[in-house]
Length: 385
Image 1 (cartoon, rainbow, N blue to C red):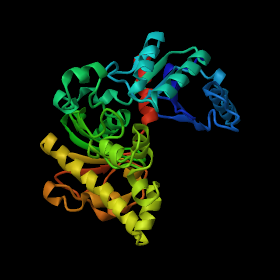
Image 2 (image 1 turned 90 degrees about the horizontal axis):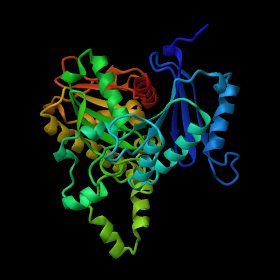
Image 3 (image 1 turned 45 degrees about the horizontal axis):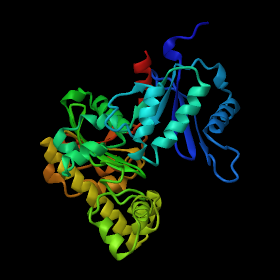
């Protein structure tokens, strides 16, 4: 029996420097036929020497689950690529020229793009189907010039591609449309403030399905307080730490990306543990929680101003979907702005998209699970036909 084209899955790959996440997804139905993770790629003592070895490990994991990947009629392979820079504002079929351009953008995302390139190269050798790059920055390529421009000399910005790019775009775009479906309203009619809260956190203002502002910038460091990232700090902090603490630029970069945020304030970066410590009376944990929420309120207020009001405030990703205390704290005191939540709805455990604001609220508050893999699979399928 010939398999219908709409039954053919897309293999979604997210290659990190030492890990490979994968899903086998049917775009139309959303069916996940398999999902997994290969870790410790290239690390000492690991049996997985490189990303080619990771693909072989993935094949073995799938075979153990009863799926022979070599016999699956793949439609395409969709690759998550963090940074598209100024070159890529849409998904693109990967050829040698595209791959070279992604490599050239590595200076903008040195922790992410090189790993994606290695993963793409390995997968293209193994799977003779179209390969598509889906960029985290693409959704925010529509930012108005006044939102994307930093106030630095224009010739310097042009020469070095300095602008606000934004990240988590695949998630924000998916959630914007999923929220419209939840509310049974056209996405074109909605003004949305979306909070993607996980170990990495970002906020966006979306009008009519298009992003008009976002919290992350040239790199994923700008904006909200995150698990290990500081988010916004005084730009003068770098020079201050260099002068007063004798730190190098690399040391400062590591400090702000890997040793700051919730971890730097409390000693933990698992938000569930942080909330447990808050409830137990830990003062450091309470401060970390309060700083985290304060920054969120700051951005919510700013985006209400940018949008001229909002129709919906949306929480998504690990913390956003699962932490009732965070949602309650963000909404607290915002009644004059039309934002409030129903405590019972907020605390009800659910994995489904749902409204948690009282009936008739001026601003709907919703919890909408994100699904970046499905979004990548669908964008890939749309492009290859």
